[in-house]
Image 1 (tube, rainbow, N blue to C red):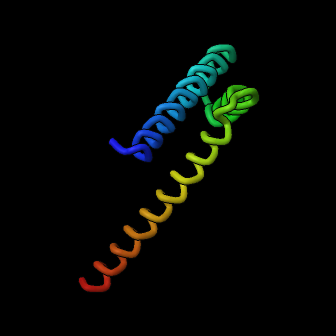
Image 2 (tube, rainbow, N blue to C red; image 1 turned 90 degrees about the horizontal axis):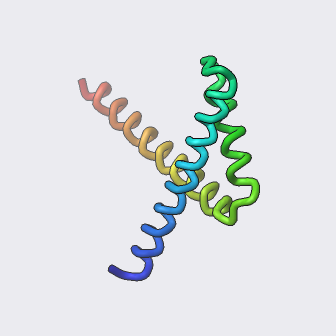
Image 3 (cartoon, rainbow, N blue to C red; image 1 turned 30 degrees about the horizontal axis):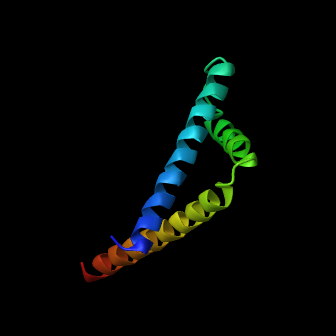
Length: 90
């Protein structure tokens, strides 16, 4: 395994660790509110802010999230274009 591949795998593991901490904190917030539905997004953002506040992994986590969103948008845009092309051919 080359160095670049190893680095990417290590970064992915670190991001998963941060996500696990955020998920755990969001669940705590949900339970603290009496498990009332309807505020999942607010709980997630608050948990994310708390976890990332003092984390040296915050820049990596944010950069990875942005890169993942961009690649998802690219993929969804491409699949939409493919479907339009198929509809045109039909």
